[in-house]
Every structure is written in structure tokens, then in C-alpha cells.
Image 1 (cartoon, rainbow, N blue to C red):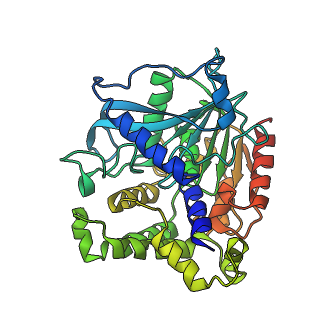
Image 2: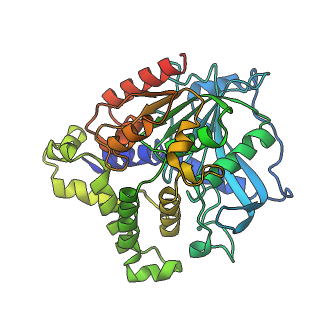
Length: 398
């Protein structure tokens, strides 16, 4: 796989569709973060409504916004003086405010992360729907170790949970956008974790829920994997317990290498499917080097670790009222739920999905028949893309 093809794939998985978008996104975020002359909440500029800037629908690119919550208390007990949630919107909010679909982001992704589902010929048509794509705490744009001031900067930033993120977005929807109900929630990976949490915390808030390549709980095997990746990163002496003065490059490369081993299926590697977009003569060594050095370009080490910790702590059974019982929490889900695990996912094994689906009375379990491992849940190849858009579109009543 040549450098350009690989970087495009990695940007897709991290929610970035092109280098130009990445640069524009950085500029937009910087501009958003300078707006904080407002007191404690995001200014109520209001979402776009039908009839405003209709030409923007054609580009299928989001408008970037920021919501700020004053004194946001996390589940860890630490209060963020200002919790920032960056989000993007596509399409236009109708007068009844009932055409909204929430797209919660996945690991280190930004609000571009669901553009594989968006378009007039795909599952989410912005001529009819208003899409809200939110960004997780720790991605470097929303509140993160890298952009928070002392005393909570870097390794002192509190561990935020999936529930923390859901609570912040619930406030964003109900307070800033004045949205009281969702047409649907669609989530991939850590976005799927959020979809499950929404289904348990707010069982009547969405008409339908879709989760691809993600589970209702991170089981011990997943925690072991994530701990291995964190250990690879923090073993670099340059990490300095998170107070590094320059990126811990060796640790970041070790982290990326361990992560890559789990990203695709064993058969994907054995069949050398990376050759499909590579020039003749590309070697395995060159491919591995690109993954090692370009996994998530420019990512901050503390941000990577924070979102790993968020991933590790995910457990819908820990929701207040369920006393740690994940099965009870799953049985409480009321909304129709399309559950789409990848048949070859090493992050979220299909066996975990089958175990969870057995507890859910409203579930439609639809495995993705793919060799692309975890990435299959975001449609990185034409077959998976077609399968996801057809199944999700049909489920949502497209």
C-alpha cells in the first residue's frame, strides 16, 4: 500500500477524509476555541433550518460548532471548569425539530467520521435529515489532555467515560439545539459504545439505534489489549509520565504497531489485501512502516491514552440503577436496535456481540461478512460500504 493510499485509509478510520479537510478542520477548531468570551454556555446561534444556505447540502461537509458546559462533573469526581464539545452539522433542522440523527464519533475521530454513510444515494440523506456528528472528549478538539489548561493539562486530565460523553451530548442536544427526540443514533466502534449507552441511559430518546463494530461493554480481553498498547507507548523514556516536552516518537510508533496487529483480520494479512491499492513491488515491510509511522498523524500521546481509558471503562451495566449487571441493562433497551458486528473484528469479537444480542428483545443482529476486521464497521472497501448503507438505510426506513 503506497503512502497516499494508506494515509487516506487511516484518515477515514480517524474521521478525516482528506488532507485539505484536516487543515481546514484544524483552522475551524482553533477559531472555535477563541470564541470563549462567552460566559459559561455556548452562544445560542441556533442550528441551520430549512431554506438557509441550501447549496451547502451539495457538499456533504459539516458546519463546525462548539458547545461549552461550565463546571462539568465527570464520573471520576473531577470537575472540568469548561467542558467543550466540538460537533458538526449536516443538512437542516426542520421546524418540528424531529429530523435529527446523532452520529457520535469513534476513537480519535472528528466530525467527518461518518461521511461514508452520508449522501443522496446513501443511508443518510441530508436533504431530509439533520445530522449531528459529535466529537469525543480526548480527540484533541473537544476537551482533551492536550488543550486543557493546568491544573488538568496532560496526564492530569480526568478519565472520562462513555457516560460522561453521552451526558455532555444530551445537554448539547436539549439545551443548545432544543432537540428533545432523535430520529436515530448511528455509531461505529466507540460511537457504537455511545449508541448502547444512549439506549440504556435514555431508552425513549431515539426512535432507532444502529451500532457497528462495537459492544455494550469492554470485556477483560479488550482491556488487556488496550493496556498492551498503552504500555508500548509509555515505555518510551521520552514520555516522562505524560509531561513530555516533545512527542515520544518511539512510544507512538510502538503503540501504532501494536494497534495495527488488531486492526484487520489475520486472513486480511495472509491474503495481502493491502496490495489492492498498492503499486507493483510494494513490500510488506513498506506497508508495516507506513502503519507504524502514519497511524494517526499528529496525535498527542496523552489524548491517545485518555481515549483508551474511556474505551476500557465502558460498561452499560455500571449505569446507575443496574448495579453492574450488563445483562439487566441490555434487557432494558426499548428502541429497535440494528447490531452489526464485523465477523472478523479482533477488537469487538462477534462472540461478544452474540452474547449481548441474546439479552436484547428489540435487536436485529446483522453481522458484516468481511475480512477487513474492525474497519469493516466503517465501510473502507466497496463491498462493506454497500452492505452497510443498504442494511442501515433499510432499517432507518430510507
